[in-house]
Length: 196
Image (cartoon, rainbow, N blue to C red; front, side, top):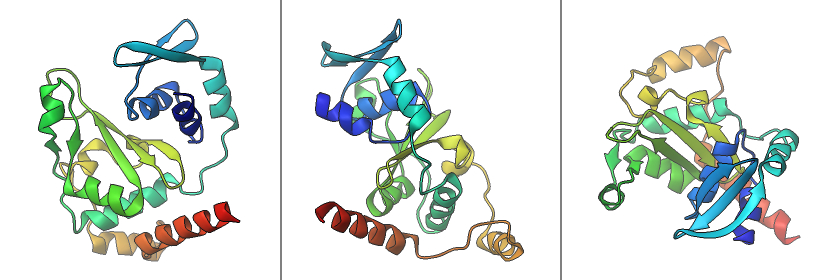
């Protein structure tokens, strides 16, 4: 558990809930009580961490190298080719949990290291929110800071390529480039630096 805890603290996040989600994605359950986060696995307490330690990490985390606007542009670029319509993973559904995915979320995860996690309330089959985890740059974003839930799931209309190009030409948006190549070269450079 200490290794998982250490690895989660390598990410930049902005709330205790985001930190707990990182642990939950590694198979843990978290409960916050009286200024501490208790960590469980299979119903057995594995340990705890002081909430103040996590809050201190939030305050001192470095500014992310990839911003929400860049993530948004990557998603919109891929949305032209990959369907954002969500499906529910049946295995999770049977356990009473809802895990949503789409062709778009799979593409973002496999090609860009971006994991999109959706949240749905009990008794609801549509998500009300999302969180985006950039595993390459180790940043966690509130989904609505990147795209609304309607845009991310294809329910809400998004600008066409032509409309976005006009925005870029006016200087209001980020220039398009080969995002996949950029992120792969960043990943390659990071691994070379780590070896040196």
